[in-house]
Length: 256
Image (cartoon, rainbow, N blue to C red; front, side, top):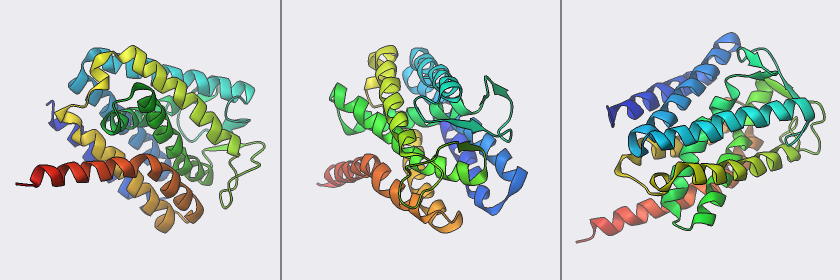
């Protein structure tokens, strides 16, 4: 179970994401919710199975509870993401926030953290890299979800070139909260979450898959070439150095 469950959840998630651009309307909304639920289950299960209950509790406490809190504040006040609201297509709400939204924070916070532990041992740099990875994922998420009408900004300017409907301040808000989230996760998770384990392959696969599939989907299937380019460049700055490091390590290990 320790090795099979994360892989099984990843396979189901990948299948759901492959189906997404092939569908429309209510089916897409259902696939969106289903994908988040699978991603959430995978990240929490992986944290528990590889690093213990404290790690899973820290992830839920910082990303799920913290994610809901910042979203509720954001909807009510416009800080830190700008003034926005959610449609009713993503399921039940609490304080005008769909309950699925904080699960999405959790889903991607964990692979961003695990990837950062592989990239650097420096405590401060690890937090920065993890936060940057999580925040730059939003360069794919928000354009896609706004295009589907799942949420909207009241004042969506200034925006990134080619990516209308989302203010630049939203991305800065993501980065600011992601830094706080990773700082809290590092403190709450203890020593276990700061060390890579042999069981990290599925969560790292999720990390690389999310990046590569998002670039492909936005560029080819969703008609969002500008967000594909922005995400490829900026999230790539967090993802590609780890890929290069892992390739170098494998080549070194393969030498006689």
